[in-house]
Length: 387
Ligand SMILES: Cc1ncc(COP(=O)(O)O)c(C=O)c1O
Image (cartoon, rainbow, N blue to C red; front, side):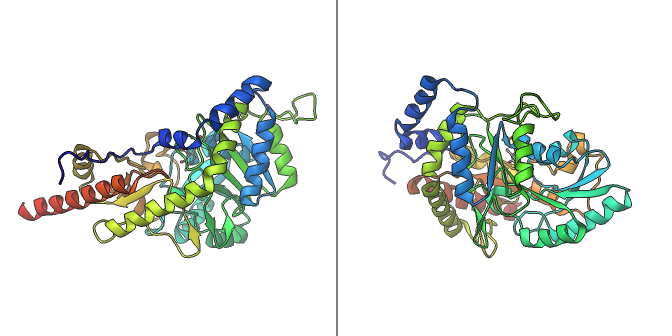
């Protein structure tokens, strides 16, 4: 190798590159807000809601302060509370289960499918049986679109229909993806997403949104996100939250939304290059038939994960773990029920590791990552063989 040539470097997520790409349009958008001064519910908020709804084909978009609140607001709008069971995957970010507890209901943990790492249909059926056995009232399912790939909504929907359950999609990681030609935002009764900065469509702070086609519930959600006070009413009618999306965040997201389709395509290219370079070396993620992913994470499965992560770090490749534990094993969640036979989430939590993934990952940097992973796996295997 030419020693004079600098070794490419890789950021796990490169928000600075994205910012550079957007040029001064972002600054202009923020300055426009500073000039008009409507920091709360300024015109950018309703404009963003309109554009997001049009982007995914949902009838209503209700923005709010973050993705966690987006989930909680739906549970509040549906009056889900004590005695109710809400089915959540055991392998997800903690917010999915947290909101159920905050609503006063009981989360029931469901195992995930070995290919997609998303909610498993047979385990969901077992979890519903378990909830009934415990005297809980099954009310809702929260499928999570882990790492950016939609859950198996057709299968989950048939179970939801059979048991009269509501479907609330946790699409914090998957806004922009699709399943069988339908965009995320239209695959469930409600969809909640997050604009946390590292999400595929991220702001420069917290933000979230709910999507639904239900006119009455959309109205209620508009009220609940602002202390239970509808925009056209003088007084609070319900117990709600203070969960508004800041106008400045809306202005930033409007700019980022313009780039979003091109960024999704760029992420797909990065995922394809990883699959080509790492398939057969490690277990790479698979996307189900009819689905597209927005690759919130590119997560592989490895043996000896700690050694793998250390060797990658030493070679200049950052990695991250999503997630270290299944939710049922977290200290605050051990008391809640789970589907009989649940076992895959613990296995996954010991082996998953995410590689750098963003729309601005240059091919040279990605080839460096791929080469590093290949050689780390080779040397770990050789080490095992020599032991
Ligand atoms: C699956 C999932 N659900 C919910 C959330 C919560 O979103 P937020 O951080 O915007 O509250 C996240 C964000 O990390 C997530 O990944």
